[in-house]
Length: 475
Ligand SMILES: NC(=O)C1=CN([C@@H]2O[C@H](COP(=O)(O)OP(=O)(O)OC[C@H]3O[C@@H](n4cnc5c(N)ncnc54)[C@H](O)[C@@H]3O)[C@@H](O)[C@H]2O)C=CC1
Ligand SMILES: C[N+](C)(C)CC(=O)CC(=O)[O-]
Image 1: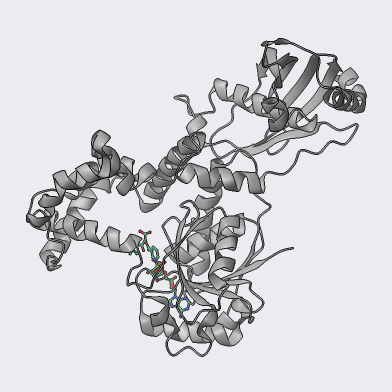
Image 2: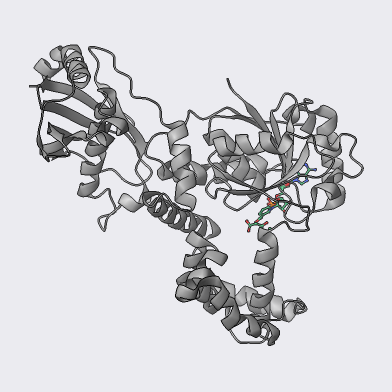
C-alpha cells in the first residue's frame, strides 16, 4: 500500500526529508513558494540517490512518485505524514501549521523540523493541535538516523508511538524527548560547543580549521560511536564514571568555558570567521563538500554496520526490513544480489577493487544457501557450506554508486556438492564479471565434508532440476 508524505518547505532540511521518504518508497508532495524550489530539490535528490543506497547490501524499495504542488492545500490533502520545514520563525510556522490543520486528513501526523521551538510553542493558537509534534532531524536527513521526537500534553495519546514506528520503517532512530525544552537535547549540546567555538575564534585562540581539526581527529570520532557518557565512563579507567567525576568534576568550577556568555557577532568577528572558513574549505564548492561529507558518513556508518553497533545497528535493522526474499522460477536464473556499489569498495584505481567482486559472489552464494534452507538457523545447528574453488573473470569496471545485480544458475547439486555460476551485470544488463563457484557441504563440528540434511538436499535437487537447461547452455 503506497503512503504519502507532504513536505512543506523544501530547503536544506525539507529536501533531506523529501529524499528520505521518496527513496524509501513513499509518494511525496512538496509545497514551497520559492520559484527555484524544483531545482534545489533536484540537487538534494541527486546527492541522496548517490549516497543512501550505498549504505545497504540490497536495493532500496522502488522510489515513490514526486509531485511539486502549487498550493499547500493540494500538497497536504490525503497525506499520511506532513513535515513542516519552513524557516525558523514562530509567526510563520503558526500560519503554516494552521493551514496544514485546515486541509490535512484527520489521522495525519504533522511533524515540525524546528530546531528550537517546543510543541506547545507551535500548537498555541492552532485550532487542531493534537497531531502536531516536533520531529527534529539532522542534516543530511537522508543519511543520519537521529530524529528527536517531542510531544506535548495536548497531543493525541498514540501520535508519538505512530510517528516512531514510521520513522523506524524509514531507517531512522526516533529519540523520544521526555519533556518539552527549547532546542530539545541535541541542539542544546551543539549550541554549547558552538558558543565556545565562537569565543575561541573571537579571542584569537584558534582558527576555524584548528577547531575543526580538534573535533574531527579526536573526540568527534569518539562521539560518533559512543556519545559522551559512555566515553567518559571509559576515561575513568577501571574505577569508572565515579572516579572520572571525582577527578574532573572540580574543573567545572574553574573558568574553562564561557558557556553563559557569547561574543557579540560584530561585523569584524563575522568577517574573520568567514575568511578563515574560505581559507579552510573554499577550494571546494558546497556541492563538493556535501559529496565529501556524504562519502565520509557512508564509509563510517558502513564500518559500524560490521560491528552491529551505534548507527550501524540502525542500518542493520533497516537492512532486514527492506531486503526482498530471493525468488526462484524454474528456467530462469535467480537474482541473488541487487545493490549499489558503496564508496568504501573503491580502490586507488578509482573503481571497485577486485576483492569486492569476491564479496559480491560470496553474497550471491549466501542467497542461494538461504533459498535451499541452509539459513542462519541451519548454520547455528552446526551445518554449512564452504567454498572450495572459485574462478572469476573480470570483464568490466564498476564504480561507487553504480547499481549492479547478480544472476545465478545452479549448475550441479549432488550430494555434498553445490556448483554455481554467477554473472554480475550492470544496470543495462552488460556483463561486469562471471564466477564459477564450487561449494561443499560441511559439518561445523568436524570441519569436514558431510551430507546435507535431507530437506536441504531435496531443495538443492529441485533448484538444479529447474536450472538443468540453463546449466546445459552455460557449459
Ligand atoms: N539547516 C539545518 O541544519 C537544520 C534546520 N532545521 C530546521 O528545519 C527548518 C527549515 O530549515 P532549513 O531547511 O535549514 O531552512 P531553508 O532556508 O534551507 O529552507 C526553508 C524553506 O522554506 C521555504 N518557505 C518559506 N516560506 C514558506 C511557506 N510559507 N510555506 C512553505 N515553505 C516556505 C523556503 O522557500 C525554503 O525553501 C527550520 O525550522 C530549522 O530550524 C532542523 C535541523 C537542522
Ligand atoms: C544549527 N541547527 C540548530 C539548525 C542545527 C540543527 O538543528 C541540527 C543539525 O543538523 O545540526
